[in-house]
Length: 52
Image (cartoon, rainbow, N blue to C red; front, side):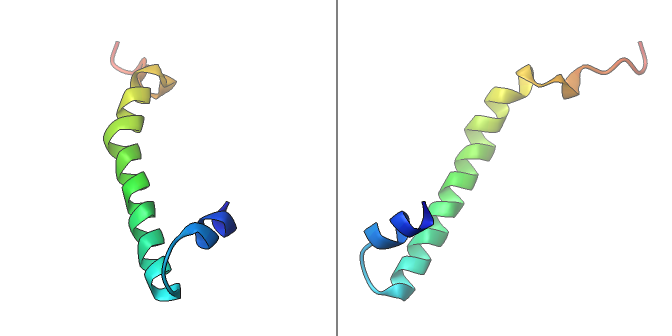
């Protein structure tokens, strides 16, 4: 997968490194902003029995 990304990004190596860093940051931000909060209600970690 990383090889495919590296071959398909434009520009010299320095530009590709910057683009890959930006893409990784965008994916990470999307996970923390939308994906993880959408999955949180379905995870069993919030089902605590302490204090009941």
